[in-house]
Image 1 (cartoon, rainbow, N blue to C red):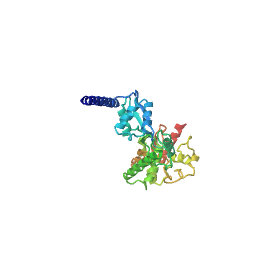
Image 2 (image 1 turned 120 degrees about the vertical axis):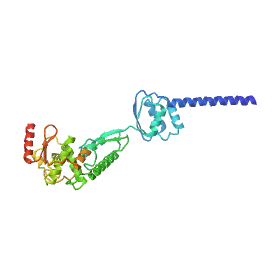
Image 3 (image 1 turned 180 degrees about the horizontal axis):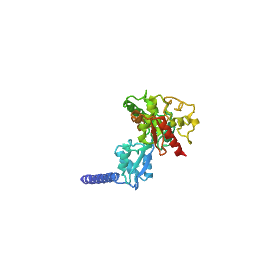
Length: 322
């Protein structure tokens, strides 16, 4: 009887030691570098179970032993914590590293850059084409309500969500700039400031000119003069904000509420989506008494205080065009 118990005890000890060795080996393998030789991006779709996720990781070369990965994840208690998304896995990432990435949800951050001065139609086209954004755009936001900047997003964010973020950013930027505006501006509301900022944005591509151009328009408003902005005429003719030809005298006489050669004050709304700098230029313009400007032929503008001086600059510009 004693020999039997001794033998059974030895067998049990051997089994325990063997099992312990297997467990130790498995734990070691779970933390050892994997087979992936180069970094890779991989999309884990929503709704995939552990088995499907493991097969996807194996097929991409991220894992060498799917069984070991599933076992390690289950023993870690994380089998229900893996998150869908787009992930970047470094070379030789361990199975534990893979699990940790999926549990933390450390998804790849994509970026969508919206340039200053685009119309809403152009911004929506970028959003529709952005890889990784999902869903249809259910409503077109008003012109001028999307703040141009670079937005980070993860695969699976909806297009409507991206638009909502852009609208919030514009609303917050406009509100804070309006609250800190200079005194004495001929503006009755933040909306008027936004309209003028969109015109300033479309008038110049030079950041240093924005406060000066804003000042010219504000000076004209103070004197009851029409804004007479060419970009508003372009918008009147093509709400996309583009025209594949120069403006003509007939264009300047177009009967349209956006044509600031015809209407006094502001057009009905913005003609584009202005950036922070253009908004700030309107809220805190340069101190000057200039009332006119015309292109200088090199991407900038020549400014004038009097109509006589302005006409001289216009004649010079016309000579440059010949």
